[in-house]
Length: 116
Image 1 (cartoon, one colour):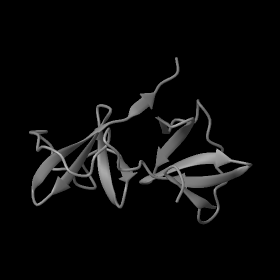
Image 2 (image 1 turned 135 degrees about the vertical axis):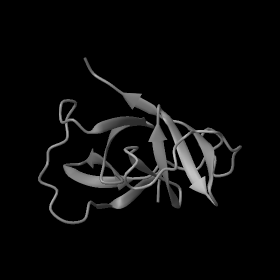
Image 3 (image 1 turned 90 degrees about the horizontal axis):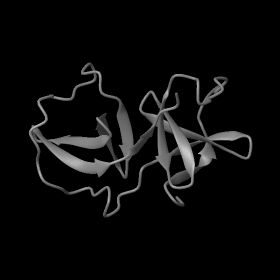
Image 4 (image 1 turned 180 degrees about the vertical axis):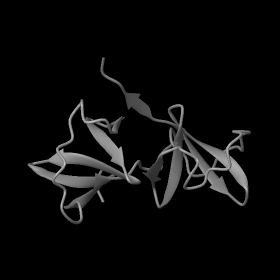
């Protein structure tokens, strides 16, 4: 893995053309924009769609303080899931929340990109 990008094409048929107007959540990741859907981050690379992962860093740690978030974070809670290191987090107001043993942990900020 290099710079949080898995070096393979997205599995299956990816006929959807991501764009600034496609409706998927957009996250600035290093020098590019990732499109979040179905618990995956996708970016275009040389005409192919590849999967990305937010790497574990000082900014986005895997270990952190607990926080009272008021959500139990389930598949039906409405928060999108984001791949972070070797696990999945939930995107809440531009921050990564991770649930473990019934507690919520703050795994740091991501830059959600919006276009008007």
